[in-house]
Image 1: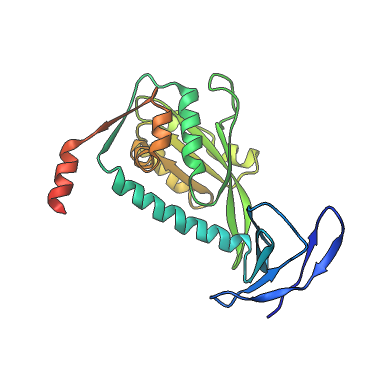
Image 2: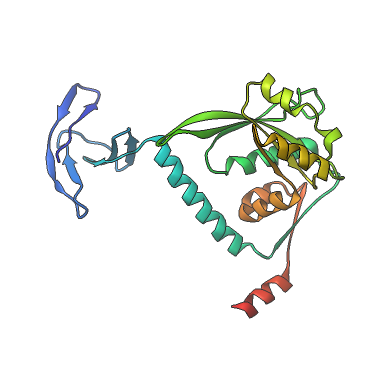
Length: 253
């Protein structure tokens, strides 16, 4: 199958139909003898085609390149990378340096969550000492709205750097907060753990909204996966190496 594309340069707009053959995978290779460019590679995607530009050549791949499939492949890549990082950093022991700086804790959570699949953006709102209307983070994620397409949903995030377990009295009016900001969900990020009553409340709300929570366990697991983030927050995160874990791993191998 032959393809055509419009190339805009500094001189004119023209349709270039110069197929130079196919590559080893059967993809059409296009050569544009009148276009000169640096030895950089550029890539552009549309719903039906992917364009790869390099020097005087352009490769055009026919396929489905909608955000749905891009997000799916990104998720697979992230999951694979996370598993590899866990294997490499299994003996890293993570702990908090108390008292935790609330602002730094929010920044840490924002950076960690930006690494999650389907996340489009994470914004920190205001300062920890200022009223925030029950929200610390605004998270925008790709949401599946059809068989092969995604939209965007808004999640409200609340961070708790308490040294004690976080309970219902610490997080109130969750439903009102979600509806006030026209969001679809609410996430809790706690430096320690959640009390049973709060978990029960979140679980009940999960029947209607997108509800999730990270405690110390989930946060530390992701810090082992993303050691670069842990290193940047050495003022609140202590990292040591558990040599006994390394010895056990060698024995198991």
